[in-house]
Length: 394
Image 1 (tube, rainbow, N blue to C red):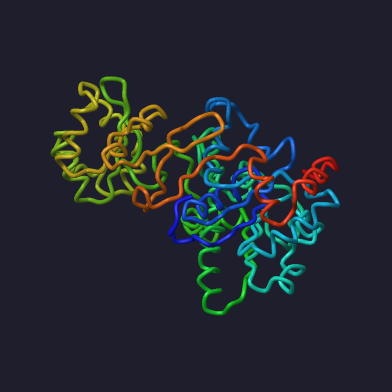
Image 2 (cartoon, one colour):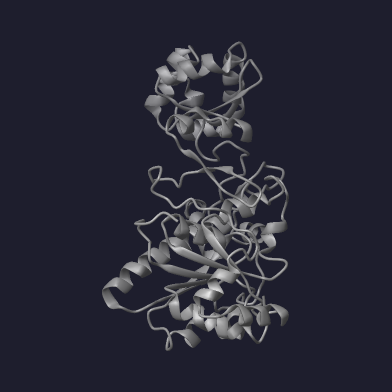
């Protein structure tokens, strides 16, 4: 693994599955931390079986698990306790997103660990947090999208829609990641570890703060507006003459005037009382949409983009996945590299904000790939490891 990265020398023990915790620990691994991922023998992280889209490997797993070491260990086996104790004695951070209450039953709660390991940072990731009436409730990404109100403002007027990626898992994973980084800095000053209790619900509700404040004190919430903006117009997708779609993003009255003059080439619209403010444009969006669609109907997307760019109006294409793989901006900035997997090398995006070659980008591990080496590092000989394997602990 690449040395001299920001988190080189930091060891993270992770009892993780699905997306939230693995996404958090992958960020730490990208920065050079040693991440030991504990997986169930024979089965592993259940995200390994979500699909077979990446040379037979699961897309979610490949995305969230590079640069880690996989230790196959049955946490419920009596022999596992000694291995976990030895690992915790060497760890800087423990991350877990097991089922509610599972870590505590294994003796891995903050309360149980902090006295023995005062420098240990313990990060618990759960659906609803470690206390409160929802504490023991199971939670998955879609359920938190629903519980947080996200679905109520996302989709078409007729039907709500989930996000196309695991947005609640990602939110929790990133708050866990940033919280761990802050806790490491704090430990550098105080010498003490810390407990982080990261809730998927709270992470998503933080991200929902704009619609929450928009609906402050019983005011109507933003309406579901599909891919358009609920309260700013024109802001969203518009078809053009070649069958493709351009996304517009107008933010103010100056841009509206220039849009009418240079893009639509209908300067009279800029002073039309029907569209004289954002509120009026939003109220008359159906009428205004028809005008814009008609103006774009004889143009190819390149022509529309050229007019928008010349007018300095924000715009984008509605890319599909294949277009993103081939995106010229990512290629020009050298943002793609390769990582090894058990099924061969696959492309991977360099972490945002980091220059190429400043991240570990080490392989995605096979299930239990590092079990033998990790146990040997803990002082177990071949005979002891074989006994644990025969007993079903590995």
